[in-house]
Length: 288
Image 1 (tube, rainbow, N blue to C red):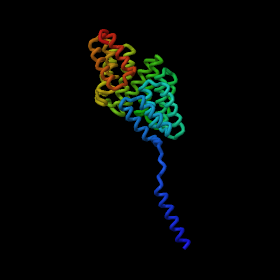
Image 2 (image 1 turned 180 degrees about the vertical axis):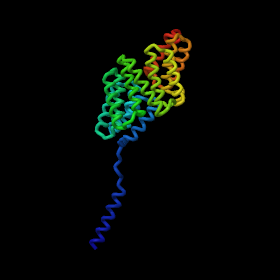
Image 3 (image 1 turned 90 degrees about the vertical axis):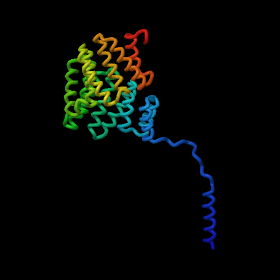
Image 4 (image 1 turned 90 degrees about the horizontal axis):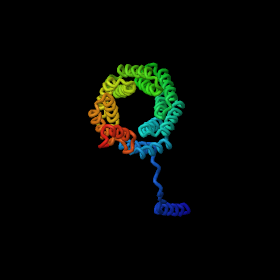
């Protein structure tokens, strides 16, 4: 009898508990690092860069990893946010130094070189590129595409230290590797062509600079299309080389097209837009 009574009481307790309203939580659950990163990538693609930067940072605070740090670093580079570039690059190097993948370390060192070069620390940038090249050569034993990219990037720092002939040699070494590894239609080959063209422009060889820019712009058009940040940059560079040869009307038309592309693909306050407008103000002062 006691057992029956206990069973009845227990059943009543279960029913009562089931009928009791559950306590509701009004706080929204914290999105995961994966969800935040996905939202950041979407905002980045849609040129909502301030929102993307905040989302990348939140994702990294929850779960830092190589891909998230690389994406945040790349956005900081495109936004000219040099302090953020340096911070993410340092995190990338620290993360990869703690691991065993030397190839990832070489990439992280290359990224830190990019940030230092953008901030004007050319000698430090060169030192990071040299360490990146050494690390990759030890890790892979071959001079591959990533090796060539670091070589080309280092040439930028060497150029910025006014060692122009040395920079030209580095660019041509990089192009030789890239031609062998990926061919002359590849995007990475186009990037190095553009870098060499910038150097030729600086050295006053405007005709060669123009020829190299035209090769680079065809690769960019075939890869990204004409409505892209990359195409706008290549077209702007080509226009300046044409202008330097005295063909002002041709240069103005190119710069106006570059301005339209940049306005369509970059935030309104981006310095690239201001730079193109400044050039146009000299060629068409009544209009710009």
